[in-house]
Length: 326
Image: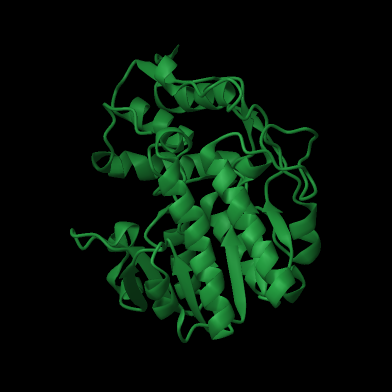
């Protein structure tokens, strides 16, 4: 693995992985979403010495021609491009099918044609739905509790079918909830932190009882790299999880304690998911990735939160704290 492509490189996890790959000595092509602003997302914030080493390719993951063009000459593809916000998927499901399912199909078709050496397809713990048992291992049943999760299930199964039908060297990488610097405000940790840092005394949240297994973004990126280097991971789907859980309410109280102890939580009905759509418990099993690689979380939850708070403290101007970002 020498020359690699990262789709979704302009996003949260994608930019962190891109930076890790450059610093690890790989030749990186970064697939960023084309737009008329000529914005490369978080890539625009990179130090010049890092950005100068990246071959930025702008395109649209929904376009098979552009995807194939971007994949020419690379050994490994890290496919992270996706629509991810669950609330937005309630009223725009078509866009999730086009991006998450058809976009993944474009990557798989190109990999088959170009004889790409490795393809890592990004899944999500949301494909499991509310835990039927814990910790959730890779044999847990799938349950599409939102249009978003349903499209990710579809993309995963397409990836599996290409491995079984055409021997495409696919690994399905399934991170549990990732957090850290550069995350969008539609996720719960940035939602809480940005409201607190903007001076709000009332922190608006949805349900407080669901639990999540939170990965710090640098640990998630490291998991991708470890799996890409592991031949035994070909044809497998692998969780990246800490095997620890915390409720949204406990998380909010911890952040309130660290940033503004006077703040109070209020329930905002707009932020509540439909009852049967809410994923009430996610606690992942990481035994498989540990058995395949030497991956282990390098950051404690406390360390990760501290770095995340510090990032948002210096980048609050990038976020619209007065609106609910779905």
